[in-house]
Length: 154
Image (cartoon, rainbow, N blue to C red):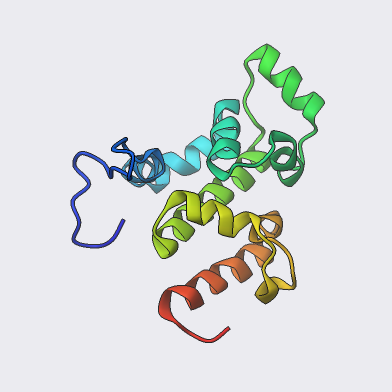
């Protein structure tokens, strides 16, 4: 969300519906870092994975692979109502944080999702999403977004 803009009622897109991506990002900020850290350490609910796959318009299996979790493990956890483990939760939170940054830079959640899933020549031909499984890859993606945001040559 841009500075100086009120988000009281949430952002409404062209269809007149509330923009869920911006609203969720706002709630995440309101939750605060300490609560977010505790949530990751406890393990995020599986529903968060489903939401993220839908947000990014990617197959659940592709997202599971990035989290280093097998589909069978996800099925077992879903049947038992379990949560993701802390390592997978951390990677999922990282993906969501980068999507929020991309939304800020590019202006729309759908545009950010397309950018995250498309091959990027500045990132060696990889899609930004594919690099988010490591801290170093995440730093490269953040740097690319900052260069876009501030109009710096890549």
